[in-house]
Length: 312
Image 1 (tube, helix red, strand yellow):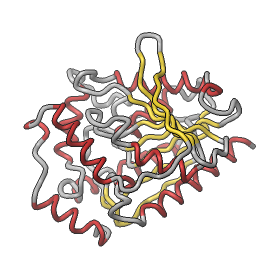
Image 2 (cartoon, one colour; image 1 turned 30 degrees about the vertical axis):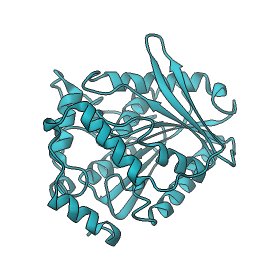
Image 3 (cartoon, one colour; image 1 turned 135 degrees about the vertical axis):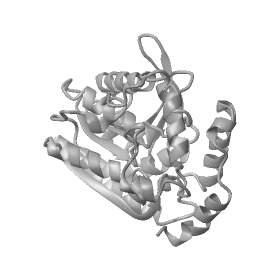
Image 4 (cartoon, rainbow, N blue to C red; image 1 turned 90 degrees about the vertical axis):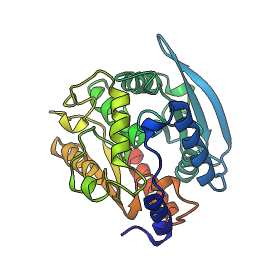
């Protein structure tokens, strides 16, 4: 059962389902996603500074947005990758979430505007995540205190990119204090019990997600590639410590739980946080459900423990 404050929202989604993504252009979908995100953000959290910039890599530049908290503790820089099924989302759609997490943690947040499908199919966004993490790790004093810890965080598709990049770079000594995976999507073959129970009407439509995976993968057909389905990694030894956040009423819940278990199997320190009665994307719904702010508070405390542990 979903949170009482979400019942009418979920009921409306059931009674008036969103059009299938195949019936809209990519630009229309992105504009709609941006409008919806803006309408749900509520009063923006106060931060000291917001600065748009770019990270210049060897063959491309990616937009970034830096959030500096009012009480900058200087302990960590959080590198954030937004959600949006690998097709949608940008710096603006997740602005409210980054502001709220920045203010709650007292940590600087650097959001990344990685390349999206279908213009840039797999593995473009994976390459962006890996290359940006390497770059920021090597130049952290350009973004925060030289001794600041690095945390990599993503939600949904962004969490998938973080999981993959963290695994691929685990032997490179990038000094990642933690990977934070918020309701991650972990592959196109979603066949878990939660996927069956919450496949439709709970704000993430599974058939829409599968359509976007097809856009993302293009001509790539091997879904067992762990860069697409991180649950297929045969070794995660040495991956950064993890916080995995799942929502009870999310079709992706069970695969998030399974990935936490896989990390733990390979000796990775993991904390699994389940938000009861919540749906996919609940951290963006604070204007509807004020209790989500308590979950953000709890997440911030967990993140601080990982930073303190890394400093020992």
